[in-house]
Image (cartoon, rainbow, N blue to C red; front, side, top):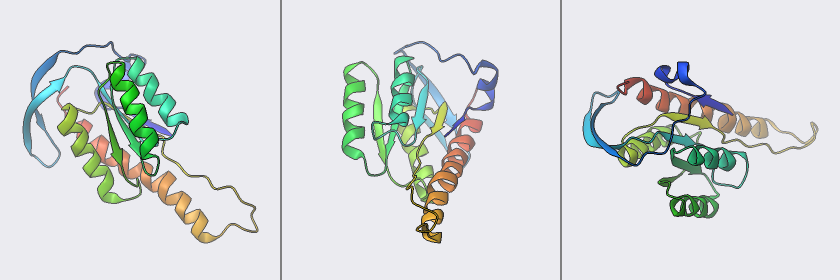
Length: 173
């Protein structure tokens, strides 16, 4: 998986912030030059793809939540697990939303970033954790198997990074 931080955070990569529930008014300028005025939490927001199932992505999401971040969970097929995780986070005081879709769908990443920004007013961190790995012997592996893994693991990572990165670069520092 990969982690994408906006440029202003690169010098503070070890700092994860502290919980803070204050709201501030902010005007955001997005890459498509739309101006959106909304309430924005002072808490940082992390989007973790592949965090629906109880595997590494969900562990990462819980870690960011423990550090005071609001969370955007992602599930393609593990919607029930993702919803349960979001409920647990809410009980602990973390605002969490669940995004469902396939990361290799070009529209999914753009729509997800819009939903995250509409809900939280910002996006600070992307962790690309969505992945597939269907192990089988070389003799049984087909071109379609390899293509599916490429589309989720590589193309999906690129599409989410592109959508999140373009938004993060347009946020005021």
